[in-house]
Length: 170
Image 1 (tube, rainbow, N blue to C red):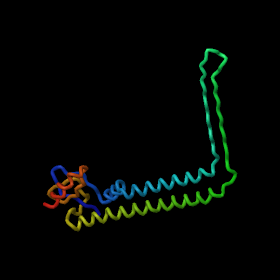
Image 2: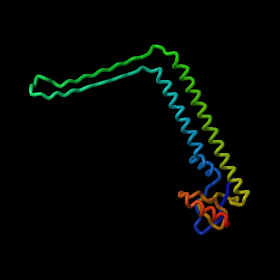
Image 3: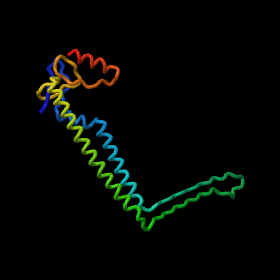
Image 4: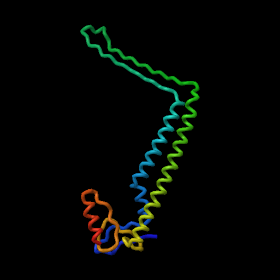
């Protein structure tokens, strides 16, 4: 199923139903939030896994001495310490919980993508039923012409009122 705007002298770029759904998935705030939560949960797995790894501390110091007496030399010192807990029973349940949280976040993102796709497709159906778009090959975006079209919201919120008034006059 696809839609078309009215023909014009210089037609605006078109958008198929599939492309409209893809665009809503790419720019949808809820989808981006779900993706960020999934990334955050993935980082939590790495943090929980790090409790199983050894600790490495390194420090260094350099002292430059200036004196008339050339017997005082510059000093350089370095220290490296590696430590590892033989077994920490708390790390395994934390890792398991972090993996479950990551899996849940991935499922939440997948569900949000599904809901956003359905909402975009449903919006196209509502516009079709209201006569705002017509069946054809694609939807025309960004043009408020004499025929059916979908007008993308303007970048400047102050211009939104003018667009709404123009739509009401149609």
